Length: 196
Image 1: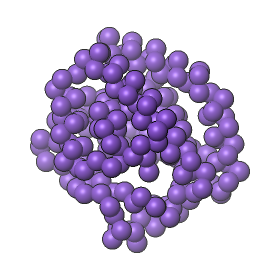
Image 2: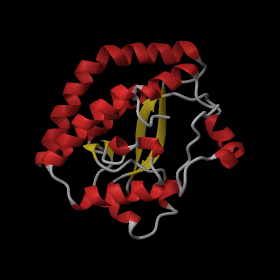
Image 3: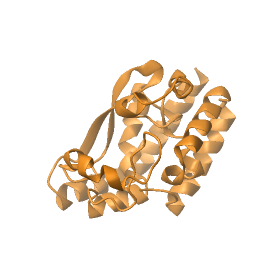
């Protein structure tokens, strides 16, 4: 109950404060490339339940079709897929990612209860299919808009680090810990550390 109150209060506050930024971002996405303003994708949430994640679109509309041809360039380990200079990302999208503005629509997911402000990164179904039983323990809690992994290197972290930090968070959750991660997130976002 305390975590839910924390989530709703913080999500509403951040949404109100960032509304002008989100309006400008939406207009920039619409004007810069063909396609919808928002990107929706199925992710796996608490207890393995699928849900729709919402972000500002940062890639060209044919990004998913082009993923197969770029698999050989994958710079991440484990089931993750990351390319530092991903050619599918638009110019506006690169800026939105650098400043983490593309993530702001996920505040709606927090308000509806499919995500939390802090928690493990919401994973793709294809990633979850490759997890062992240990990693699946992270599904005991809601995925987060930010988390321990994100503030400790973000996309620069290895899959082993990602797994270890998420499992540590699940086993050691507290409101104080959530608050610390939120404060650290501000610094990480302002520095653009590990964003891709």
